[in-house]
Amino acid sequence: MLPEHLKVNEEGHLVVGGCDTVDLAEQFGTPLYVMDEGLIRKICRAYKDSFAMYYGGQGTPVYASKAFCCKEMCRIVKSEGFDLEIVSGGELYTALAAGFDPAHIHFNGNNKTCEEIRYALEQKVGHILVDNIEELHLIQKFSEVMNRVTTVSLRIKPGIDAHTHQFIRTGQIDSKFGFALETGEAMQAVQETLALPNLDLEGVQCHIGSQIFDIAPFVEAAKVMLQFMQDVREKTGVTVRVLDLGGGFGIRYTDADQPVPYNDYMREVSTAIHKKCRELSFPVPYVYIEPGRSVVGEAGLTLYTVGSVKEIPGVRNYVAVDGGMTDNPRYILYQSAYDVLLANHADRAPDYTATVAGRCCESGDLIQENVKMGKPKAGDLIAVLSTGAYNYSMASNYNRVCRPPVIMVRGGSPRVVVRRESYEDLIRNDL
Ligand SMILES: *Cc1c(COP(=O)(O)O)cnc(C)c1O
Image (tube, rainbow, N blue to C red; front, side, top):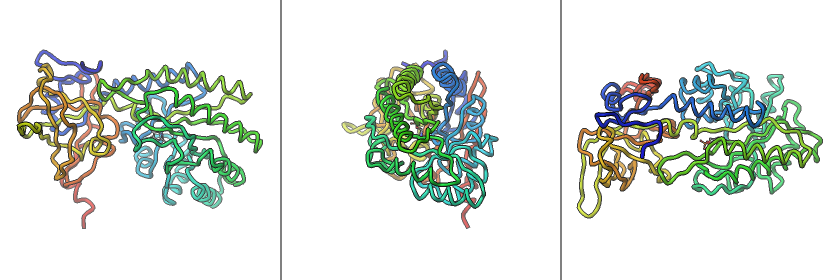
């Protein structure tokens, strides 16, 4: 069963954004990242609409650019009225090159360098999320030298277990991110921030994990954070005005995943926020959420050409493709599940059990093990679905493999938004 945005045409070819994937592979080569721009924009609008509905505009979605970052993606979320979250100087540089207004950029990260902090301040980045005390003092120092007041929020660990893969769980106390609530570290950080003359504490932020399907941990996190805002008001007399609840909304990779409609999540969390604020007589804060994966994940697919099929009797069938861990390291990192289709025979019954292998000199370089797909042969085209997030952005040049291009498709027309890397690109910094 295909996701709604994908079709199969009369020739049995997989179609995305009105474009035949066989034509795309011929025109642009493989491996190839294909992104459905219409779906990205549809999801952006769903987030914007629910902010309008549940927060009366007193909130903004912030696209976590690490999920998929390039200039065109920054332009797309800008045109949809999103803010942008960055975690490095490189992401900031990309955003600025795309014309993104720095006042709407949020700078996160657990170990920003001095150069990055200075760069962000010079460029007038509007929101800095502070992760630790050393960073707090660095921002104070640079702000003083630059004779300015910098708006900051504090990254808090609310101690929520979001039942997800432990490598991507970041809300609990054993985490490298942020200030812990239960040890008193967070309150101390608030007091230190308020005592620093060149900092304006606008709010608090948390991010409880990724690929989460439950609404409950988000509701719980919102309540814990509001209680903390109330504790801050009692202890210091200061009312912080911003609550940033991070990202982490799950998407569908395979049938095993059943994401909550984002509107349901938005409704329940906003209901909990309004209720808790009434209970505490606390003014409803300005709310940010930071979706990354859910904005782009399902909109992407990767096309590969099959090079060989090795059937090892009683063991498994290796289907080797012209990409692998260099363009999608998520299987080797997290054993992530993906649906795989024979894109040039998408109408063929998925009765063949394949282990899709990459081309790197690494036995673990697999895209998927024992997945059901139509029976392939050399030269066939394979599509791996839901690769829009954390694929291109995590790609590497291991084995000096060139990174694939990214194509946006919309209304039947494709356009290149990231060119294919060349051998020349690979040696550009070699001396
Ligand atoms: C990674 C991250 C996000 C985005 O997470 P998704 O799971 O992609 O939605 C948002 N905020 C912060 C602080 C993050 O680290």
